[in-house]
Every structure is written in structure tokens, then in C-alpha cells.
Length: 62
Image (cartoon, rainbow, N blue to C red; front, side, top):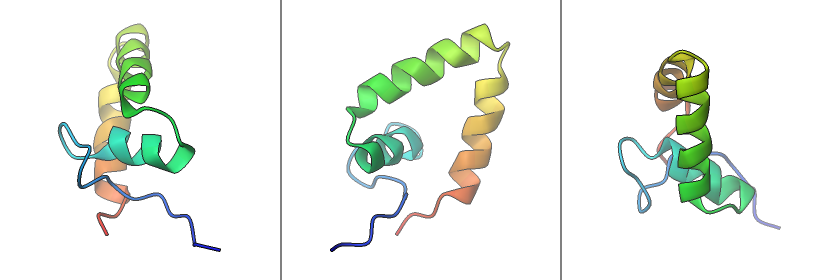
């Protein structure tokens, strides 16, 4: 059994690969993750941007 890890996507990236990596980890299309992230960012008064920056720093790129 292959060890499943959350990493940034190297092939499906727009900015830093965070949404692509999350999509690959959960088996969801990264476009859906990006749309959800954008909606949460606009509804949460920009808190999604801070969360994205933290995720970009914390999630490894292996």
C-alpha cells in the first residue's frame, strides 16, 4: 500500500500548487477546490488568502 501524503502538485499548479495538491490528495478535481477556495475567500472577507499563504509555506513540495 502506497503511503498517501499531502504535497503540493508539481503538474497541476496555478500559483504554488496548493489546490492541485489538495485535489490530488482527496481525489477531487483541483478546479472544484479552487472554486470553493475562491468562494470562501470572498465570503470570509479575505481570510482565504491568509490560509492559502500559510498552506503554501507549510505543505511540502516533494
